[in-house]
Length: 397
Image (tube, rainbow, N blue to C red; front, top):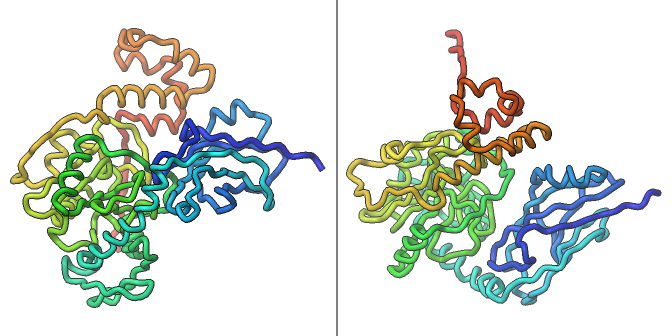
């Protein structure tokens, strides 16, 4: 039998140190001569991961099978043994075929130790503030059973794992086109969001992070809502039908979320409903960004478009271009994606162009340039200046 060869590489964290209680691990593995799907474990405990496209690895290791991955490590699972050194293991047929040692910082272990207490505090608050998302606003009282939450009005049952309240029944999943996560969204708060959270923490209130993705730690001042059960998430629900009583939150965050919802106006209305009078609402929404993200990308908005989402009597405290939205992100994102979706020979020529080479011609005159004609169909959809559709109305029945 031909011997198998395996490689396991970690890109993130770059130093191999887990620095927060909930951390994303990015990397890739490669193998030669096998057909089974490898598995990842941390010290022999299964580590769930999602596949990530890594053309750079595939090109470099063209004589092997390779796979990029993204996984999440919750250090609360390590607290019992206070382990500061763990081993990431690549398994095949119940045997370890490659491994990498990683370090867990004392701060990450400490945060993991505090996470359980934070979750208990938020769980008690949630029991008093959640309502059925299917029933009319504020009418669906919830009672908590051993492993379920039940609406006293309509009888709908919602799973309760003790960590996450699942207010995403099939009816809502289907209505709002919610699909299983194919990626892990993980970002830190910017300075504006951080200041809002700290102000609310000092007052003893609660912040709703609506569409939170995965946050690096469990925070007892922040209720994280998502459609995927990341370790930092408290409630599964859709933005269009928030399962909270009106005027529950001292502040609401909606950070790069509304482009991914089917009806941003309905979502904005819900964010307003659950915010207390006098509370702050911080909303970021893309303007010039290419097609991206989970679960879908529907709408971008101009500065006036963002303002149209919310009532006219809301006082505008700030309306700015944040550092995370500087035009250089747009420029870099478009250029890097454009290059990635060209054939290799055209990519090399494209990367030799200077800015003035592109601006020397009008766009109409560029349409027949080789680097324009060679862009892949996927690249055209991701970076399109406009898209168009011809539709037909169904015949009357």
